[in-house]
Amino acid sequence: MSNINQLQLVLRNSLTTLHALDVTQFPPTLKYCLQHGDTQRLWDDASHRTLATWQYSVLHTLPTEVRSSGLPAAALSWCGEGGALRSGTWMHIDLVHFSAGMNDVHIMSAGEISDEDIQQLMTALQPLLSLAGFELHCSAANHWYVWCEEVLDVQTHALQIGLTTRSYDVLPTGNDAPPLRRLLTEIQMLLHQHPLNQQRERQGLSVINAAWFSGAGSPTPATSSTLQRIMSDQPYVQGLCEQLNVTCWPIPRSVTEMLRIRDNDMVLVIDGTNVLQVEEQWLQPLLRGVNRGNVQHLHIYLDHLRVILHGGRRQQLLRWTHRAVNVKELLA
Image 1 (cartoon, rainbow, N blue to C red):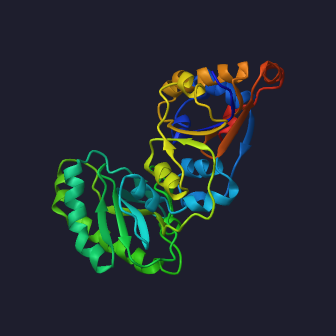
Image 2 (cartoon, rainbow, N blue to C red):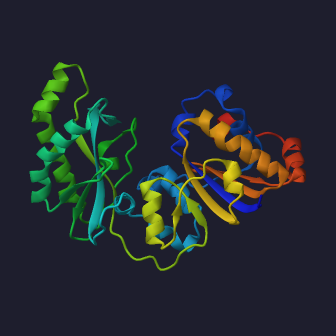
């Protein structure tokens, strides 16, 4: 069994799940890592809204000089799903439910909706999108994208279900944003009148009354790369690896299998939604590997937090003798 010098573990969407848990319900290994590891807050400001937080975490695992290569999230995801990448501007397009308040808007999931219904609504949007200069594309996994030939100066916000904010704080910005904002308004009007939404309203279901653009950007050739071994099943990461001209390896079946790989610098991106499964399959055996010295440096990314644990028995003793961090305050 080989030793790993550095392993960087990114848990996707982890804090969304963790915030729903009482601290007393935290899986013990994850709680131990948060209490006794060296914890850093990677960012605090609102400038990190253009990507999902786990995507920014992925970029933080990479060398500084290659991080900008991962910013056109929609283009990279489309490429990672097997789509043919063209120059121009790519964006994700998602259908959501806007619940408007007096001074803000609540962004919610559309709830139960079949792929066929989404197809029906997207087909209805196609003429509007075409008039605005966009092509509509659907991946094999039924994820939807728009593309236009121009390289637009526009910034979009990542979709955050459950977000309550002032609508103009999350609308597209940039020199080319005004026509895009008008297009979103026209889409809302069309969706409001669509027979499918009228049917959903009669059935007591949430209406799909808005579209959300995110991940806007134009792919540009990467000027540098990385020697890290990157392992993920996520289209965004797979597209990023293609951008960097490196292999995106499949996720190992277990920590034991991963420790047999002869690479000293690894990045592993896994689904963090089921924290109990992550605890049993990954965190418990990884912590054992850290304590035994099989993993010299373990970095765990929980969205905007990075927790670092150093390998070996001496480091294990130091962790136990240092005062534990208050996890509730850490996640506040």
